[in-house]
Length: 286
Image 1 (cartoon, one colour):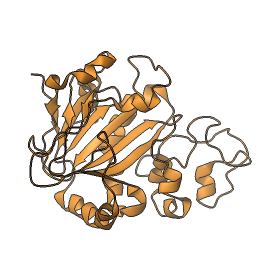
Image 2 (image 1 turned 90 degrees about the horizontal axis):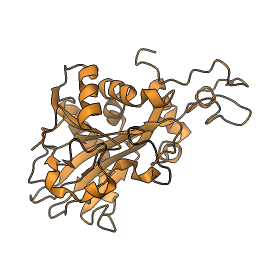
Image 3 (image 1 turned 30 degrees about the vertical axis):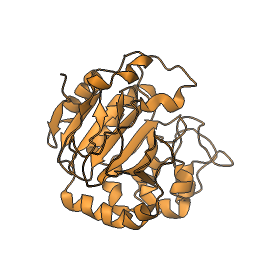
Image 4 (image 1 turned 90 degrees about the vertical axis):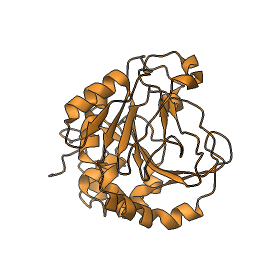
């Protein structure tokens, strides 16, 4: 059986990206401190409690999906904009866009008795357009907020499924569980076949799902409502741009009189032309 490549937090983004491009999935173990994970869970607890269970099998009838992480949990910023993950994502998506942006943020709580989710590719939301078979438009992550085990519903992934035909989503026998300790992350691309596992334990399995897409595609979670300007202004500059408060490319996403949305958000004039605008996601020291 093919295994998911595993890396340590100290391994290079180049090596991790190479494995991700080849196999379609990787695990980076112990990337986030347990204390940070616990802080996120504490900040999100009231929102998770208020979230209803899924109304059909795909979202999970014993599963809660709680979003708007940037607005609800300041601690989550450290995972949403983790520098290693962003560097890996840039290496995967960089050939196809000037920048990339958040696609969605959500905590996924699979309750006891939860059934395995149907296998799928995350790029299915863009199925109205046939991207080239070898083109990655999305990078997905699921952070383990609990130890992920076979029993409690660790995410199921089919390694080397990047170029498989659509019918391969029925190949449940080929899946491998992304088992990993709390604070680890499984990273996979939008072309990788995967799905949530069945929770056969008596505990809730909690994971933080953060996806990234090319800057010129529509976000799955509307960040401008989930993280409105009054909240976005309190976030670091690179996170504001990651959320979408920047140009997706030349002439994509400007405000009113051809102004740069990042500048407008931060009380600057924003200019009146596209020339010279920096549309890239800045490094953490900018």
